[in-house]
Image (cartoon, rainbow, N blue to C red; front, side, top):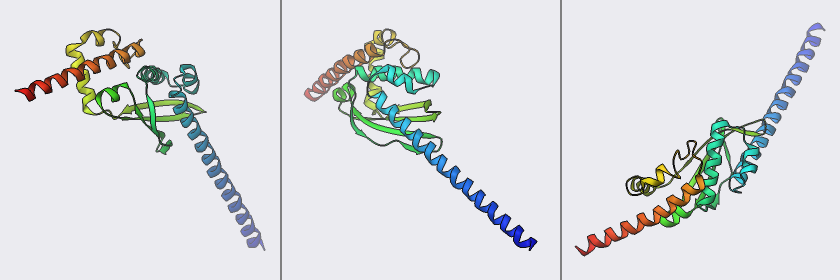
Length: 195
């Protein structure tokens, strides 16, 4: 009889433990789904070009400041979403990929994908990394700017993405320089073809 009672007690404990395990799985799923919604709201806020709306969803210190700079840069360069993929949970972050066309891409002939890796805690984005997949021509543009339009890098683009204060002016100056860069390359190509 004692064994049966002991067995029943053990069975009850297993059910309780199993119930707690299911509750933990449910709560983790709920938290994960809730965090995923925060990541999606981050993307909505970024591409709304409303700095206050984006700032409200973040608690990310310097990373957040860089994202606000990037948002203003993207706004001035007329980023338009071409394809938005759902954010995906990967390891300890949510990864969100958005393909855009912008004034740089239109001028230089490409589309790029922004990838945001977001850490979400307590309904806030607390960690952010971002990168684009701009092609090598974009880096060549910046090399050209540093030689031919150095005043851009010492002026509106001073400390670009690292504490700079004029992201919109910087983006517009880079777009203008990109147009000159393309014209110069086209004229060099025409010259080399005529020789």
